[in-house]
Image 1 (spheres, rainbow, N blue to C red):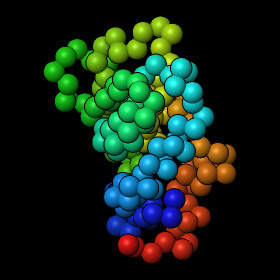
Image 2 (image 1 turned 90 degrees about the vertical axis):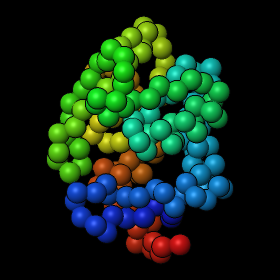
Image 3 (image 1 turned 135 degrees about the horizontal axis):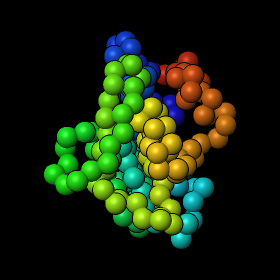
Length: 155
């Protein structure tokens, strides 16, 4: 978490930047291991990720678990019939996401790698769970203030 950079540009941007972690092969690999720790590969049928950060982590997690990947796109990007959801993001702007129709079949166990608001709406609509972090860390995420921000130094 020490590689997660706090937002220094204002409310129109996400509250943290994970891209330094993606550059560090060991940190990125450890992140994938940490996020998949609660799951056995036989408990998961599919990994979904929200455009765009969810594509990075979701793709890596799907690869690690040897599962398929479902891309949840920003509205208007898929060329097939879609289901969509509306929500307000961290900047309070209305957003829409879409997934291909019939992406979920009854009984599919899907892990969703999500950003906060869009993920909440997906979990409500499709009745799936996506939290894989400890209560202490989830509280920091909900407050948008990681303990590691206190000692963060750009690399």
